[in-house]
Length: 426
Image 1: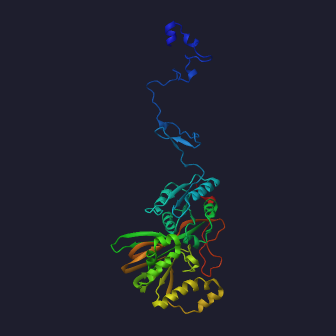
Image 2: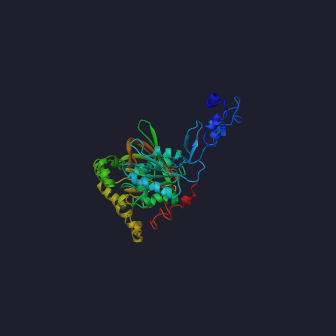
Image 3: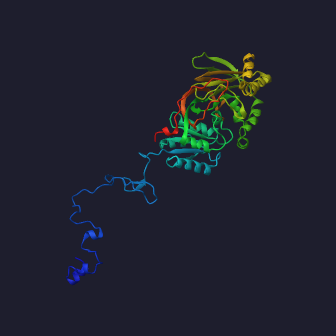
C-alpha cells in the first residue's frame, strides 16, 4: 500500500494523484515485471552464455556481440563474406600514411574487411609479424620495404597458399624487377591484391652451419651466395647504401677485391658426384637479373622447380675482366639478339664463370666464409645446404601480366595455373 493510501485509508488515493493514463498499481504501466509471471525462488537464473549473441548494430554502427561475461565485443569475421588483407611495411622505406590510406581505400572498394597493418623493426624484419597476420586468417598479405623485408615476409609465407603482393619500395626491388612488375607507384600492385592474377614461384632454403656447430635455416627468393659476393655486401657502408641504393655496392666491391683470395670448397649437386675446386664465390639463384640491367643468369626462371648455380673462379686480374665481360656484355647485351647468341655459341668457354642447374647444392669449406641471402649478410658458415621448394609462394600480379619476358633467348618457364583474386575463399 502506498504512503498516501496508508495516511487516508483510501486505496484509490495513489491513482488519484497519478498522471492521466498511468496507474501505479499496474506493474505493466511502468514496465515492472508482473508478479504473477515473476520467477519463483526455486527457478534457475539464466547464465550469460545461455543468452543468444546480440549482433545488432552498436552506437558506432559496428556489429557487436555479448561474450560470456556479458561484455560487448566486436563481431569477428567468422561467417562473414568479406576477406581481409594485411600490410607489412618498413616505415623507413615507405611513406606509411599514404600507403596505409591506399590499402584501406582499395580494400573498401573491393568489399573486403578493414585491413591489418604491421610495421617491421630492427628485431623483426617482417617474418614474425607476418606469422601473426596469417594467424589472424588474412586472405592476402602485402609487403612494402627493401629486399630484406621481402625476403623475411616470403620466408614466413612459404607454403601458406596465401597470396603475397610485392609493393615496390626503395631502390633495389630485386624480386619485383625479376618478375617484371610495375615500379612506377604502388597503386597498380595494391589493386592487384583484390583484382589480379596469381602466380606460384619457387622459394630457396639455405641451411647454414656455423663453425661452432650452430645451425640456422633461412629462405631466399632472389639469390644467395658464399664468398666474395657476401664479403662485398658485408663491406658496404650502411649509410652509403641508404642514400645511394645498389650503387653503394661498388664501394663494397672495391674494398673486397683488394684482399680477395680464392678458397677451396667441396660441393655436390643432387644426383651428381662430389667436386673440389678453388673459387671466389658460389652463387645459388632463383632469379638472374641484377640492378642496372645486368643479367647474371639470363636463363634463370622463378617457377621451374630448380635453382641456378654460378661458380665464379677467375684466374688473376685478366680473369676478372672475363667475369665482367660475361655478365655485362655477353649475358646483358649479346644474348638479346639472334646474331649475338650465334656469336656466343661459337666462342670458346673461358671457365671464369661456370653454370649448373639443379634442385639444390651442398657446399663445405674448411674455414668459415661469409654468406648472403637476397642482399643481406648472414654471418659466416662452414657448411651450406641449399634446396628449392617448388611453387611454395603465391604472388599477386596485375591481371593479364606475364612474369616472363616475351623473348629472352633462354628456356621457358614451366606453366603454372593462374587463379584470379576473386577465387580467394573468405
